Amino acid sequence: MAASSRAQVLDLYRAMLRESKRFSAYNYRTYAIRRIRDAFRENKNVKDPVEIQTLVNKARRDLGIIRRQCLNDHPKQLNSACAAVEGEAAEAPLCLLPGTAHPLLCPDCGRTRVKKLPRHC
Image (cartoon, rainbow, N blue to C red; front, side, top):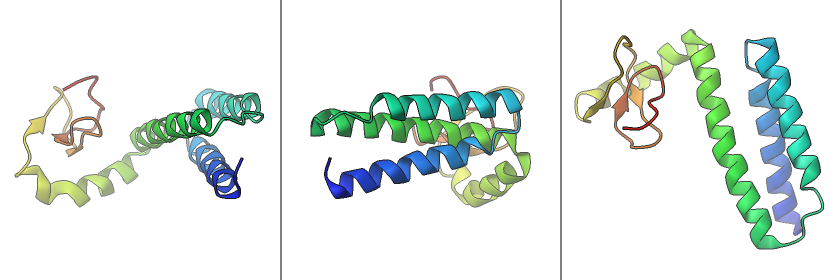
């Protein structure tokens, strides 16, 4: 593994652990940390650069999921994120779920969405 690739993987590993520690529920937090450690240990001997890049991309997607889940766990952070995109809410088409009121950008389609993540738009 090249030095820059190794540094990139270690940064990603640390970021995933750091974000997982923000889960408010103990069971989710410990499960996420255990799964991250197990996955990285399982793949520590991978030498193929293409496979490494595939695993890094998957880990980045998973990190995004962890961050969005942690946002849903912490309403104060969610409200500050809503304030950041309020100006864009009027311009972008809405991707709404019933019973929610916090507009954010949908990570899948880029449209304005609400507090809960939509399964599909």
